[in-house]
Amino acid sequence: MKSPLSDNSSGRWAAKLRQTLGLSQTHFPHLRHTSPNLSYGRHIGPAYPRTRQAANLILIYPDTSGRWMIPLMVRAETEGIHAGEIALPGGRREPGETALTTALREFNEETGHLVAAKAVVGELPPTNVWASNHKVRTFVALETSMPVWKPDPREVAALLYLPVTQLMDPRNFGMHQVTRRRVQFSAPHLSVDGQRVWGATLRMLVELGQALTSAK
Image (cartoon, rainbow, N blue to C red; front, top):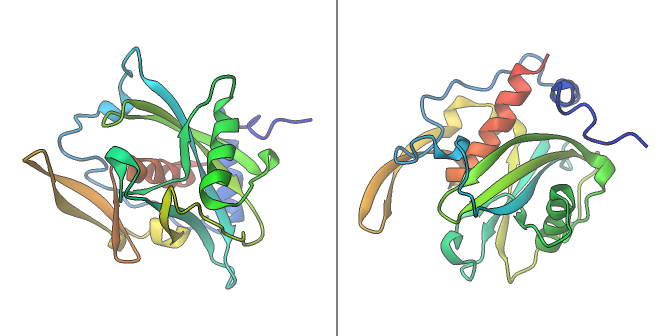
């Protein structure tokens, strides 16, 4: 059987996805900043030798009105350093797992929806999350019907739903101030339902938008 990622290296998956989503005439906005100003490009640099491996999943699906959506989750307050932050469903790899298996398992555990491996259409460049010392591989999946969500309250405080058209609209991006350990810095964000998506999650969504724009 043909692998769902067989076209990943050439970028053909992004071109096919762009056409399916009706984005042929849409371009991802040029952003001056896509990472906090104290990150110094570390998210794309080499990872620490003992970096932990993780994976997550960007699922694109149509809502009841036919809009293409991406589910995001607000992490429960029990989720350590990233508690209360908005993230893509995902988590750390278990022994013996492939990155794709991790992404699908974690998505199911956190949202209650099982995505089939055959729905995965491609993979984005990995992201180093320095705050928690993880290297995250991000997969992209496409489904043609709206899922039934049953988020795990132990890990997920709420689900948010990002329209793909909103991701591609420059009016939804901005900058804000963040304070960490008495250090204040500015960071870019994407507004979703009145909340700010920033940091590694924003970086992964930016990678998706850029992939869809550059696809040929």
